Image (cartoon, rainbow, N blue to C red; front, side):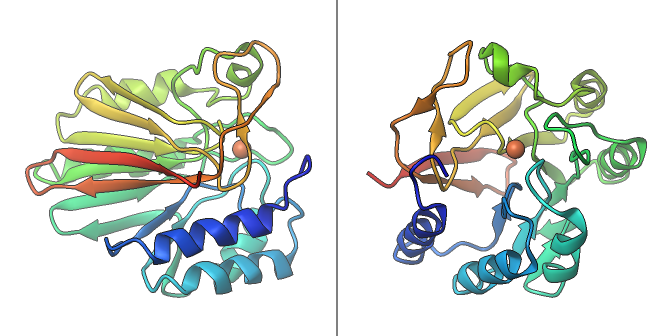
Amino acid sequence: MRGLNTFESFMAVINRASNDPRKADAIIATGDLVQDETRQGYERFRDAIGALNAPVHCIPGNHDSPRIMAETLSQPPFHFCGTHIYGGWRLIMLNSAVRWDDAGRLEATQLKILESALEKHPDAHILVGLHHHPLPTGSRWLDGLGLRNSDEFLDIIDRYPNMRGVAWGHVHQASETLRNGVLMLSTPSTGSQFLPDSDVFMMDSRPPAYRWIDLHSDGSIETEVVWLS
Ligand SMILES: [Fe+2]
């Protein structure tokens, strides 16, 4: 991909994460897992990330086959979309992918899953994962490819005080924004990155990365991006 062997950089991220003294309780993979949309690609992803011995929560991005992803990544320790409980937290993995569109949308069924969880479990802390960015990045080209109905999504999360965090991929850059008490996080790619604040498409020279997210029992979140420099 533009001069980078993304399988090798992905494996470098897996290697770095597996040598991290902190043991992950779960892995969130926010989509664009296999650009060529082959079954073999998803099997390679499954074999590689399975070595981390943790549940892996997957959602599709614009560069994915949701059908093949669901077929290959639905058996434990892999999970395709859906809601999952970790202590006092509920992780809600939403599908924002729209076939043949690089921008995203949360269909009514996805919004309903989110709102039901927020409504039915007021004592649970809620973390949402989705592929597309619900907040603008400040890059004009990229902001045309975000979550098209982010207003509906933000309207829901604004109404529930148990909403704690939202994490997404897609934008190939790191950001952390506290919005109405909710931590909004974008995570860099395991491949190459996009130059922040650029109005036109530009690659960044920053290395592959992953993000740690610590979910505390009081509902607070600590997080950091680990860059493979
Ligand atoms: Fe994407």
